[in-house]
Length: 396
Ligand code: F6P
Image (cartoon, rainbow, N blue to C red; front, side, top):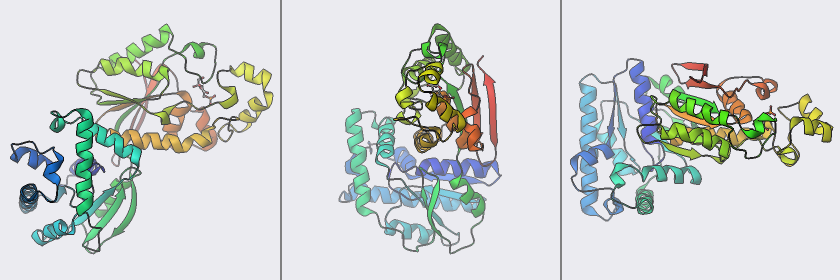
C-alpha cells in the first residue's frame, strides 16, 4: 500500500485480505503502525516522531519498515501467497528499499488518494478518537494528526514507473492510473475488488411514523408519533445483538429520533453521524403541504410530477434526478467513514432510501420513485464481490 495517512489504505488492505482469504488465497497484512505500537514502549502518536529532522524517530520507523518487509518475505516463503505491506511508503527511497528486499516476488504498489477536504477532516476526526491518542484532548489529537500528514507530504515523491502500480481514488472506488510490468497472480480479482462497493451488512431503515406522516404532509422537520417511537424501540431491540460502530442518519429530527435508541442500546461504543446528504428530498414551494393540498392549490405541480416523477424537480426544490449526486456522495461518505465495519445502519427517508436502494440495485429510472420503502420493515443489503443480497425484513 502507499499513500498519505487517512486515505483509506488499511480499509482497502483489510478488504483485499478478507476477499482473498474467502477465495482460499493465503494473505496477510503487515502494518507498520501496528508493529510500531507493539515494539515501541513510549508513545509515538506525537507528531514530532514523524518529523523528518527527528533522526531517532526516522531510524526507528526505518527499522520497523525493514522488520515488516522481512516478516512479509518470510510469510511468502512459508506458503503465503499475498503479503500486504500496509504503510505510507510515500518516499521513493522507501519504495526502492521494498523492491530491493523483495526481488524474488512481483511487487504491486496500490496508492490510495482522496483529497476531498470534508471526508479527510471527518476521517481525521475519527482517527483522533483511537486509543493511541487517548492522552490528548480531541482537538490536540486532530492537530497532531494533521501535523503528521504534513510531515509525510514533505517526504512524498510521486510514482515514476517504479514497478507495477495502481492509483485508486479510495472514496469513489475508481482507478485513476495503472501500469503493469509483470504478470501478477490474482490481478483480475484484485482490480475488480478495488472498484466494487464493499458493503458487508448495511441495514437501511426508514424513520418511524411522524405527525406529518399521519396526514401525508411532506418535507418539514416533524417529530415521531408514539407509534414512531415504539417503532424506534423495536428497531433498537432488533439490532441490540448486532455490533454497530456507526449509525448514519439525516439532519432531520425524525431520523435522529429513530436512530438514537438503536445507538444507545449498543453495548460497545456506537457513534451516530447525521449527514446532510441523507436529508429528505427538498419539495421547494411544496414543503410542508399535503399531497391533497398540492393537487388542489398547484395542480400543474401535482400532474407534472405524476407524469415523470423521477425527472420532475419541485420549483425551488429538488427532484429524484437532482438528488442523485448528493445521495451517492452520502453513501461513499458513510462507507468511507465506517472503514471496514461489519455492520452499519443508515436511517433515512422515503425518497432518500429509494435512491440508496437504486445505487445498489438496478432499477429503470421511472421505477425508482416507487420503490417500496415501508416504515415497519428495513432492507438488509450485502454488496460484495462474492455476494449480493437484498432482503426486506420485518422489525421484530
Ligand atoms: O411523506 C414522507 C416523505 O418522506 C416526504 O417528506 C417526501 O417528500 C416524500 O415522502 C417522498 O416520496 P414521494 O417522492 O413518493 O412523494
